[in-house]
Amino acid sequence: QVQLVESGGGLVQAGGSLRLSCAASGSTLSNYAMGWFRQAPGKEREFVAVISWSGGSTYYADSVKGRFAMSRDNAKNTAYLQMSSLKPEDTAVYYCAAERVSGGYSVFPRSYDYWGQGTQVTVSS
Image 1 (cartoon, rainbow, N blue to C red):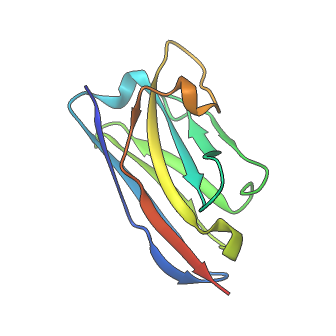
Image 2 (image 1 turned 180 degrees about the vertical axis):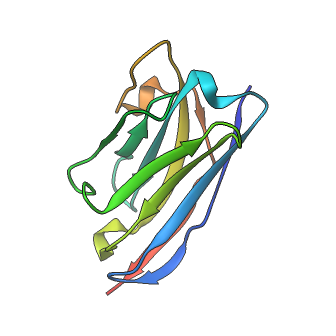
Image 3 (image 1 turned 90 degrees about the vertical axis):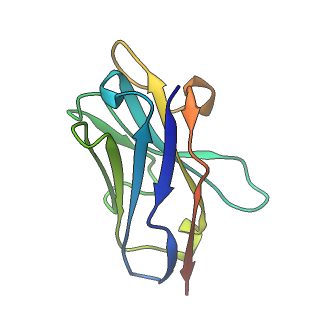
């Protein structure tokens, strides 16, 4: 079992930055791709970013490309999402997730094995 805990959310003005963290316990993350997803009120959960198990590859949703950067530190069992140039439409609950992989990664929530409880990000205009 892997337990994931997100932190770093909060209220920020448009154009500002936040750094989300996802700390894992119960198992090493080195065999897992890590993803960030978000869900705004009344909307479905959507893919934001993913990083391979080694950290050597990342992929982003078009809506955040160039503004968000995902990284991981397997020694600390933690993944990060650096969010810059935030927009009001980035407002959502952000979830991290872990996908057990032998290679590659997925952008689909159904592929992920473990989820955190979410952290609220609110961007004011």
